[in-house]
Length: 362
Image (cartoon, rainbow, N blue to C red; front, top):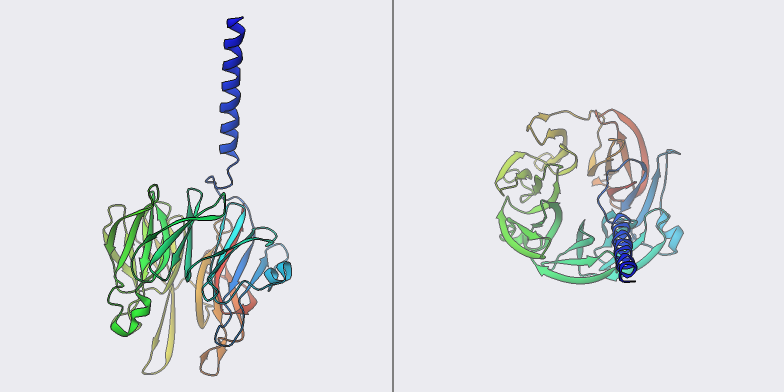
């Protein structure tokens, strides 16, 4: 009798272990290698001052078409004012609207709204270990539990944090001091390094003036763009933070994206003495440091973002159309598609002020 009882216990334990293992395997936030990309969401910021709400459009690869305002069509509501950033993590699309102080959580395939969360002046998103991180312009980073879709806690970083990157078990947060432009972004010279396991700031890394953008390559290197003070004497610059937190300058750049160990960037600058705007397109091998110039010949006049599909390797550059006095911030924008070598593929008309492309990968 004791022998059968012992066998029963062993079988029960094995079943429990197997069940737990299956749960782990079915975790929607488990790391995976992208193998399919069906299309992309276009995050249109709209124009707060012109009372134009944000919108989310969808670029269908199969049909080769872009349908604007798919979010409002699905949910009968707009995604707030000043849509700032979007992120697909697990089975969900997370999107934040800065002026509306809100996060929208929707099904990544249908855009059906699942939940909204109140967040304070959200600027950017990052995700890791089942958590979604929100940088808040009030100087904090908020951590959201991806399973319960509730706010877990917040940690204080630097002044006016912007974009974030995940690498080597850490969250790197750019501290721009963007609201202190009248005093030269005096406190905007650092990146806060947060240990994800404990959600505590381990250190601040000194970087260039007014850091606003961040991403990581597949080798654990972090790249940030310090925007400077938007003058010719202090232009925006691309910097690398290695695994030992050593910082080095790469090149002048205004916006970027990365795929594995290849970083794509645009340097957009204006000569205010002649009001002439110039765009330079290039790529950098993040392992060797080799820079390839003149990547794209058929560019755009007023670029807003550069994005790369991790599966197709195609590049997408969002842009504003020209207006009477520079860029048109109240009319429809567009996104250009390119092959990995910079060859132009197609132009799509978008909503107002398209600031980001979010790829729906599987």
